[in-house]
Every structure is written in structure tokens, then in C-alpha cells.
Amino acid sequence: MNIDKSPGWVRMAQIGLGAVILILSILVLLNPVMGGISVIFILALLLFFAGIEKVVSGIIGRGRARLVSIGLGIVVIVISLLAMTYPQGATAVIVILLGIALLVDGISRIIHSLRRRERGRMSNMFGIGVGALEIIFAIAIIVYPNIGIALAGILIGIALLITSIQILAAGLTGHSRRNDTLTK
Image (cartoon, rainbow, N blue to C red; front, side, top):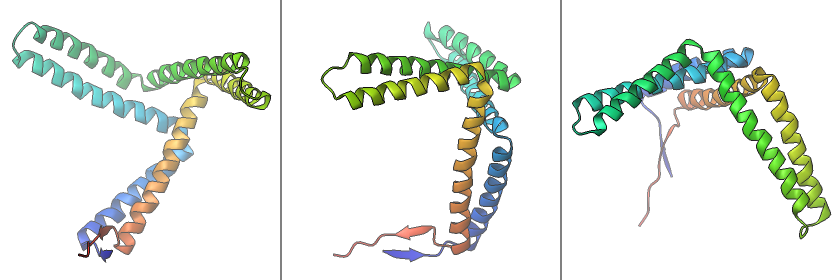
């Protein structure tokens, strides 16, 4: 394996971007709810542009499907604008839906564990315990959606922090490019 140093401009870009990501990750960890809401805002922005593309492709397209494309594109634009206007509400709705999914999974695990006879008693008890824990977390998330938003923000912040450290290390050492050479 042959390791080449990255060019100076790449290393400076890595250091700069790594520093920006480091600062943003610290901000997200200091206010994890805003980190979760920011993700929803960015996703809504992406959907906004996807909706615009749908409308444009419907306008320039041919056939009966073009009206459907325009209509669905307008729906996507409206929903994405609502999510961007009220990102905390959109985030809360998504977290509540995930909480409901967790609740259903917990109930399913308990029912499945109670009905299983072929497995050992310890395995069934573990399944019931996991299901009960899921139900407790789900109820907490449904009743207090900010808990789920904060948890998502914390996980995002930790991931960004680790990413920033890796990017900074690559920029500082210059060992970001690896060329594997095959010997014949």
C-alpha cells in the first residue's frame, strides 16, 4: 500500500471544513432539539426542489400524466413549505409517528414472546422485557416529543463530532489518499 500526501489546497479545505463541522457539532450538542429540527428543515428544502422539478417536468412533458405530475409537484411544494415554515411542528409529527411505530413494535414483541412455546423461558422473558422497554420509551416519546427530537439531535451531534475529528486528522496529517498498488 502506497500512501501519498494530499495537495496543500485539499488539506486546507479539509481543515476548514473539519473546523466548521466541529463547531456545528458542538452547537448541536449544546442544543440538540435545534439539531433535530435543522435536519427536518433541510429535508423539507430538498423536497421543495423535488416538487419544483415535478411541476417543471409536468409542464414540459406530454400526455395525460403531466397534469398528475404538476398536481403532485404542487402538493409536495406546499407540504415542504409548511415543514420549512413550522419545522418544530413537522419534527414533532415525525417523532410522534416514530413513537407510534415503536409502540406497535413493543406490543408485537410482547405478544410474539407470549405465544412462543418452542423457545426457552429465558428467551421469552427477554422478549417481553424488550417489548415493555420499547412501550415505555414510545409512550415517553409520544407524550413528550422533544425527548425524541433531542435524542435525534444528540446522535446527529455525536456523528458530526466524530466526522469532524476524522476530517481534521486527514487534513493535518495529509494522509487522506491511499493508493493500493497491485504487484504482479
